[in-house]
Length: 506
Ligand code: GAP
Image 1 (spheres, rainbow, N blue to C red):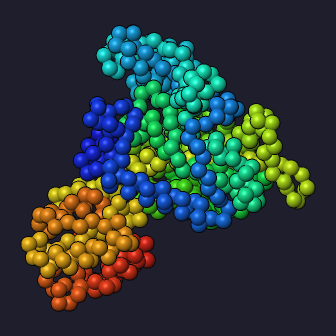
Image 2: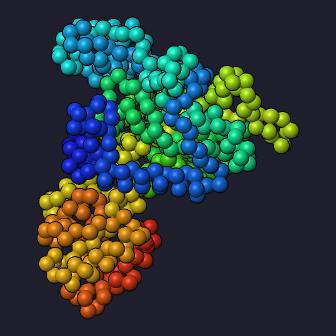
Image 3: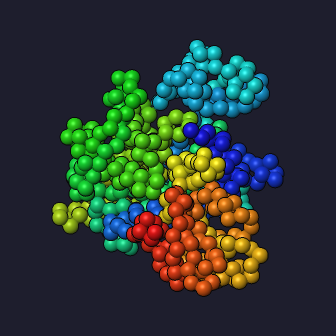
């Protein structure tokens, strides 16, 4: 499998992702998306928004502010609890996450361990500084991951605010307004896509752990008396996923087992709403190209759960550095709404017309997916070195591909071919992100587009001039077909949306 460093090198060379501000030496944990990367990232977000918000009648979206009121984070528990334990090297001053050092070197799960437990394990396993190799590593005070800033000209305490470490809290603070404006009735969800910031002690693994990243989150609210029943779970009854429960982990196991949703429910391993959202998310990722053998769902063990969660399952991906969280799906109960009601003194309950009473809904599932980690997953599962073509091919789902179609004149020194090819390009780019290329041999141009993940290449040749048609080439099979130029846009629409198979053109 491709390593994360090899993927980072590829991303930089092809203009997917660069280290941020590289001309000044870069900044650890910050990245910029290049011309291909921004298209792929935008497509991921568009596909998510379409299937999670626009195509559903029970979910609406918001877009909250990034710099947020400090009271939000006091109420949510982030000021007190959003910390990691840091190990600092007494010799070179390097900071590392103590839990990561122990997990990496001693291969021991560290969920929920406190400062002294980690210090003890570091001594027992003679863990050294990963930078200079010295053994004078000392555990420091728990380190809060939130970025603080000041708002306005004053720099006093009253001007302090935070960059949000998760988008979720804005959903809770806007809950009442959004519910009333959109006239939502339980059960319903509120979704948001946006930046989040965490001052990670040791960012690592390229986009996997950065300090600035994006999240796609939903808080799904259910009547407190109806948390045991999910009207949608039936549609996923026979859906199968790789499952690793907390019970299996307690017995020392790390091997997941293929299990159907129905079996999980029958054995009461999970509540129906939680199972529904895990299957929905798993299916969404798979439908856009994530390989199901690289996905699993893993339940948090008791010590690992966040302060707000009654049950959490991670959707994990088999990264080259191990199975790691791609998406967290927690049951947050009514924790957040209750906390914000207490702290703000505002009523955040909903009216229940059946009982004529007010109820505080429960968040039965919070699907929280990182855009940047999803970006990595789609790239890993699309990437192939094709030894026949002697070239990298990115088999990205056409819905995600940064460039949907490339247009070439067969020869760049034939004016009439160039003119016709440019006409085709000008027409197509009104509807799709397209690329025009007349440099190098046709073979080189195909290779460059295969590497960029472009699903279709269109070549205007001498026959095109008289017959008003062109060849269209399929990235994955390399097969070609001739199509009328006036039908190209419609055919591309059908191919890109999956309504037409390329084979039906030949
Ligand atoms: N609101 C819940 C929440 O934020 P989380 O598990 O801390 O839960 C959700 O984060 C997702 O955000 C993760 O599954 C991951 O995809 C992404 N994420 C979290 N920290 C990240 C980081 N430092 N860099 C990149 N993505 C991150």
